[in-house]
Amino acid sequence: MMNSAPNNLLAGAPAVLNVGIDAFNASVTQHGGTLVNVDWRPPGNAQPLLAWNLARALADERIDAANAEATQRIIGARPLWEDIALRADGVWPELRGTRLVLHAGPPVAWQAMCGPMRGALVGAVLYEGWAQTPEQATQMLARGEVEFAQCHDFGAVGPMTGIISASMPLIQVREATRGRRAYTNLNEGIGRCLRFGANGPDVLQRLKWFENVLAPVLKAGVREVFEATGGMDLKAIQAQALLMGDEVHSRNAASTSLLFMQLAVALAAPRVREALPAGHVHQALEFIARSSQFFLNYSMVSCKAIMDSAHGVPHSTVVTATARNGTETGLRVSGLGPQWFTAPSDFPQGLFFPGFTQADACPDIGDSAITETAGFGGCSFAASPALTLLAGGSVSDALRYSREMHEVCVTRNPGLSLPALDFAGAPCGIDVRKVLDTGIRPVMTTGIAHREAGIGQIGAGIVRVPMACYVRAFEAVAAQILR
Image 1: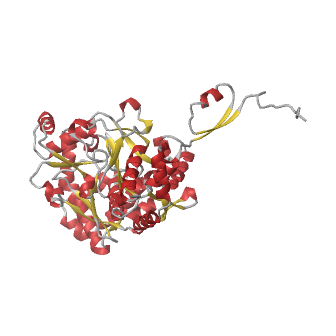
Image 2: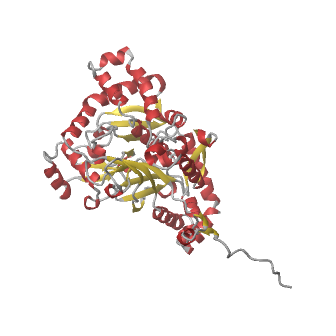
Image 3: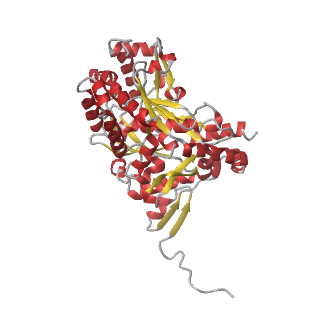
């Protein structure tokens, strides 16, 4: 007997659950329907062979064991600021007597470089005295008279353009557990900076002041700490800063204050103060006090030391470096050696300073994404609700980003607590397999640079790592590990 009860399915506006492709959503909402959209995509980037290999890799006990080893190295790492190298060519003989300049991100040729990268290289050529005018410097660079290399290949990192040349002083950090050293340059503060491509007399004068005043003061202070304790524990500062509102990538107000306190005490020691020229300590501390992002470079080099200690674990699919050069984004993976897996960089999305729009933005740039690989930045966005005021979105978005990052990581780091998530540990160990299995592209907090040299930061927001980077990395996993 047929049921004659009325069917109300078509009588009113539809209520729809949409899974995956969102092209149908507008037609529902435009006609008064209610909609819940589930952002889903097939595992393996919807590529059958890749999905099959992914299924094999997810069940591979060798990879699981290797990833456990890599993440334990991350969790157990202890990066100590132990010194300031007064010249980069004193650390790397390759820079001595040559025209070699290091830059952020994976390899990139002069012809393919973004505006800020080109402007910063011009500034480095002028700073080193290889040319006398910007025009001469540009011609030298275009003719191939200056060589380029990647900071990461020298155990270093640099924010935005990441330029390091022979005469520049470096922060030196040692990872106490495995003994690896890492380096970075000094943070220039805000405004017109070399890292954003500015290269005028004001920029070069500041770099010379770093060389002659700031670096010797920092060296004296950190050596005082080193004599007492073996070095300043940067990871301890980073962990404490997470409890104070930083995510220690785009926001470093608390971490800079913590560094300032330890450094000021060391510089107040009579033997340190007496050994430095009059007024230099005051100048250095005043500069740091006015630069809330000063700790960024320390956070980056700390994370570089941590992640280099986790690199080189056979069979591991943990990402140990993410870097951008303003043209491409690249990954390195623990078990895959020095190879970069690259794809065109996305444009950051966020809030722009007055007078600027998305059309002014440079594609994502800088080595600072090393912080995400170590569990800070986007992994720890939940720790920094204040950052949402600068980067856009809401506090609930910040919590969601940290939860998403846990979905693509091997484990949590018990030493990095996120108060807003009931003090859960920060996500630890981005796993190439999990990115492809979930379809979640890791999120990074970032500053937004103007596409032209010298204008500087024009906003802040987030950016996702291109999925193609993970696809290419996993193809190498399949070729080398799943044979």
